[in-house]
Length: 82
Image 1: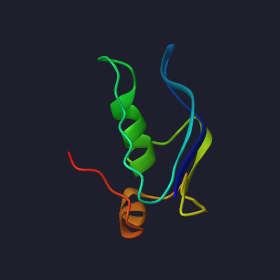
Image 2: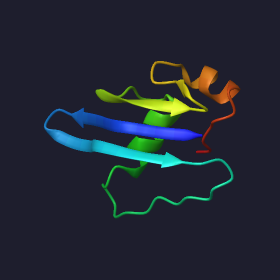
Image 3: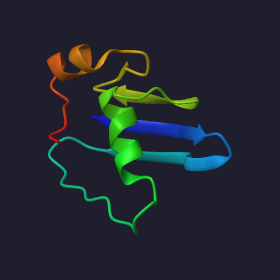
Image 4: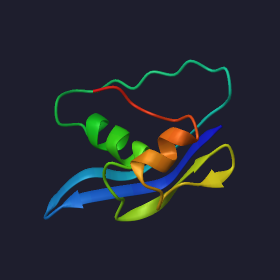
């Protein structure tokens, strides 16, 4: 259902997300944990389209959503709550 492949996001010399890959199947509950500054919020921003990745791909239901706007991603049924 959701697949992230080799996702990278850098801010200057800071590597916020560096080579993140995972798959989440339908009807699977998954958590993301880590210390402050680990890149959790950045990863959520990348998946939901609020930020654009430097490298890598994001697939939702088999569709590459890497270049979609947040609105288009939300219309597919994938969103986040602030």
